[in-house]
Length: 127
Image (spheres, rainbow, N blue to C red):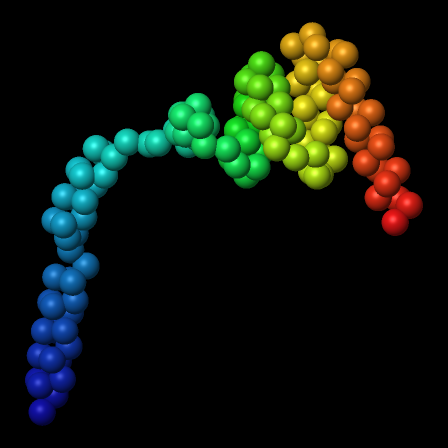
């Protein structure tokens, strides 16, 4: 009678070892995974914008991306496109656009943007 539980335990151990073995499908998946290409989202957005698509969200993302990469010429370009669509933006966009303009040497336009920010902050404080 004691042989049956021991035999059952040994069979369970034997089958559980088989369950922990490495699955060959994992290796196949890893081999396929090596062939995936990473998409540069910024370049994709830039191509879309250059084809004529205009969106506040698109220009915000492009400006922020190039600003973070310290590419101030492109950041100023896309923030400029953003500001042609609307001036109803957060103060962050005004500051980053002005910094990008200062960095490329367009201080006159940067000062104009900062003046717009001051006017906007005055109107929001009076409401």
